[in-house]
Amino acid sequence: QVHLVESGGGLVQAGGSLRLSCAASGSRFSILAMGWYRQAPGKQRELVARITTGGSTNYADTVKGRFTISRDNAKNTVYLRLNSLKPEDTAVYYCYALYAGLGDGWGQGTQVTVSS
Image 1 (cartoon, helix red, strand yellow):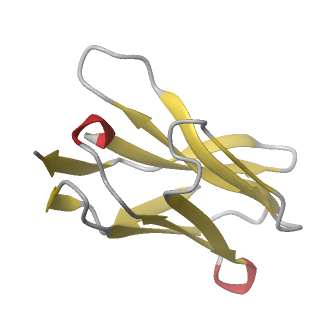
Image 2: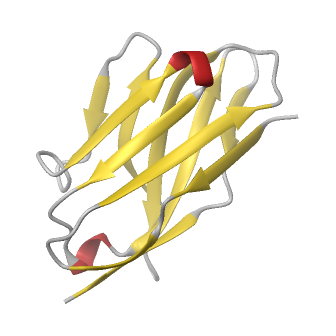
């Protein structure tokens, strides 16, 4: 059973920083990619950043230059460094993992709130 556990969300002032972590466990299938989505109230879930096992990354245009995704393959853990946070970054951030032969797994979500 796929299990993704996120941590690191919280309340921060505009311009501040946070680091999110997500550890994947419980599956014998290889992880091809991990990443983060977010969903703000009244909006659709959107991709924030994604990183493959090989280290290739892609980011939403709205976070490029401010957020950095990284990954520890040995620990099946993905990190998201959020810098220069803006109130519009406020959302629930969801970790996901793409498993070979299995599909997506999702975390429960962690709240990030940026005050102005």
